[in-house]
Image: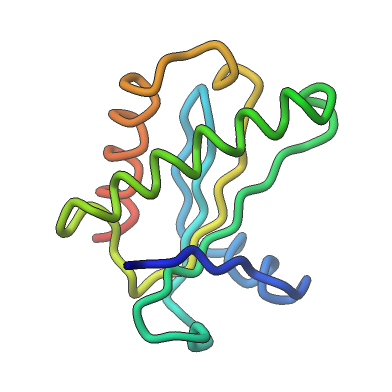
Length: 116
């Protein structure tokens, strides 16, 4: 099973934010080739970030949980997410009210563009 491993240090975030990016109405995805090894070989380096401007903690955590669940589903599909990249996903407030199906189609499109 693939586990999600978060970025820890500020310089790691800065490095990823300078590389490839994909924006939608519900989230933004930033990607960079893996510049350091994950703890275990089959872990995916990905962080989920919400700005405080989005709303209270309940709303931010719900958006984060939705996006994480979609990434977990995509990891089960072969080739949907390229594990050679480190990702940062910025959630937006529009994702709070939208259905999983809509968010998943947007996320598939984003990971396809970034994985090339």
